[in-house]
Image (cartoon, rainbow, N blue to C red):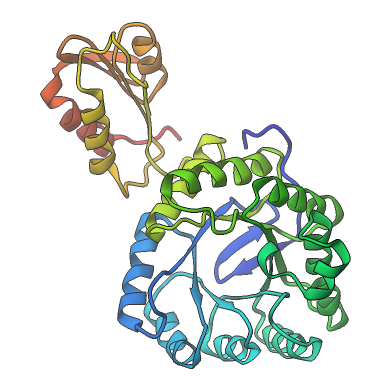
Amino acid sequence: MNSTHPRRKTRQVFVGDVPIGGDAPISVQTMTKTKTSDVEATVAQILRCKEAGADIVRVTVNDKEAAEAIGDIVKSVNIPIVADIHFNHIFALKSLEAGVAKVRINPGNIGSKERVKEVLELAKSKNIPIRIGVNSGSLEKDLLEKYNYPTAEALYESAMRHVEYAAEFNFEDIVISVKSTSVPLMIAAYRLIAARTDFPLHLGVTEAGRLRAGTIKSAVGIGTLLAEGIGDTIRVSLTDEPEMEIETGKEILRTLGMSQRTVEIISCPTCGRVEVDLFKITEQLENRLKGINKPVRISVLGCAVNGPGEARESDIGIAAGKGTGILYIGGEIVRKIPESEIVDAVYEEVMKFAPKK
């Protein structure tokens, strides 16, 4: 793993067949945006998420109709499903009975200790993990009174309160998240949890916003922690389709050298030296290669300054000149290609590409 710090050592839990923590790869999660009661639409979205590369998908179970639908959803897909529970612990119990792979509960609104106990006991009997999902926007009232406003210590204390509840019932199959819309607060809270516990951590900046702003906030918050060796599974929260959350999450991992499961495209920002339509070429390449999970590095550079060097260092490279591109494979020049054929040529080489063992 290429990060600034070694990976934090944690215990490991399994969400279905996906390990979280320990030495497992960092998994990417998303959440459905359909009405859960619409089983057909929800299943279709989950299948698209899996196709996009999601490891785990979370589904809200927020009402009676959703609780009745979750069992059919779980049976219809082959990917671990997490039930997202707020306010009503009965929905958590029904989700556990329906066969979900994990339950997320929010300590700030799940209710009494007795209700938490019911959920933990059933989860333990079924060997299903729980995520204690703390959110700065829904902290317990007594913690808000104690700290006056959400702080890293308040988020930590909320999470640990429920870890202690779980310990009373010998339940330790736990993942923790301490999310906030504030990136500095989220970073501080996760650092606190990481320093004081060995539970695996689910990273995220909650309610990050639309694609552009949300991607930046998530990359800064999640990326900072991952670079410090903190974090075991991630979810990027965007006001966009869940496939975009997955794509963004995977890009964060790839940027840090923590994932090579998908195509990586390196391209220059362009300047007055560029003599091909690089905007068009890279856009077409991204669209053609979307969903292809090959560990291949492609560079498409538009001039002679960095182009040849980057092209040689990539698995497949294009160093473009006046209306043409030089194709490099494995650092070697293969042939010259007209600008109009660059996208097709690179796509064909990606399809033929086999990583070195």
